[in-house]
Image (tube, rainbow over all chains, first blue to last red; front, side, top):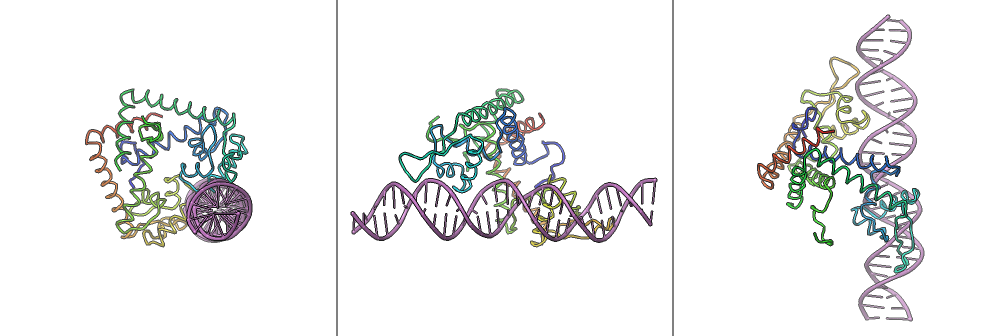
Length: 145
Length: 145
DNA sequence: GCAATATGGTCATGGTGCCTGGCTTTCAGG
DNA sequence: CCTGAAAGCCAGGCACCATGACCATATTGC
C-alpha cells in the first residue's frame, strides 16, 4: 500500500517479499518451459503434490487447497500434454489414480533442477551465510502465526 | 527433519518466500477490512498507485501493470464504495481524474497503519536485527537481476 | 442382507478477473 | 481544417475456479 516506483529498499517488507516471490516464481516456469516442457504456472500445483505411484484427484485437490473440479481441469490439461494418466484405482473402483508418465516425471525432474539452479543463484548473490540466514528468518516468520 | 510433518524449513527458498508473502498479504486485507473499510485484495492495486490529488485511469493502469479496462472496473467498484470519485480533468477534457474521497484517504491511511503493525510484528518475531537483515537480503535479491 | 449415508469423480452453470476490438470524444501537429 | 493519436467506455470472450446436481461405488448400522 505504498508507492512502489523507486528502489526495492523503499518498499515495505511485505511488498519486498511479494516482489521476490513473483520474480523467482516466473523464473521457475520460464526455466522449465525453456527446457522443453511446456506448462502453465498452475500446473506446478499438481506437480508439487503428485506422487510417483499416483494419487487420487481429491487428494491432490486437498493438498493443493482447491476444489476437486479445479484440480480436474488441471489434470485434463496435463493429460492432454501427456504428463499424467488417469488409471483406475485397484483398491477403490470409484477412484482414479493420477499417475505421472515418463514425460511427466522428466518434467518434474526438470522443475526440480531449475529450482536447484535458482537456489544456487540465490547463494551466489547472498553468499552461503546470507542464504541460510534468509531461510532461517523466513522459517521463523512462517512458524510464528 | 521428519518426513510426515513437513515444516517451513523443508520448503525450498522460493516456496518459503511465497508462503510468507501470501500469509502477510492476507493479513493486510483482513486488517483493513477489520477496521471497517470493506475492500477486495485487488483494490490495493489502486490504493497503492493513486495520488491524493487524483490520477488518470490510464496512468493508474500503467503503474499497476494492467489494461485501462481492468483498472476501470476496479475504479467502478471503488466508486460504488465511495472511496474514489471520477472528476473531469481540467487540463484535458478527454480524461477523468480518479480522486480519493475523504473515506478513501481514511482507508488508505488504515492500510498503511495495518502494514506498520505487521512490520512491527515482524520485528517482534525476528528482532530488530533480524528484520533489518531480512530487508537487506531481500533488497539484494531484488536488485540482482 | 439391505437401506442409509458417505465418498470419488464428472457435468452444468455461474461469477470473477482480465483481455481484445471497436467506438466516441478530444487533443495536437501539419 | 484534417489526420493520427490518446482517454475512456462498451461489448464480447476466455481463463480460472466455485457451487450444485448427479451417478457409481464404498461403508456403515440395523
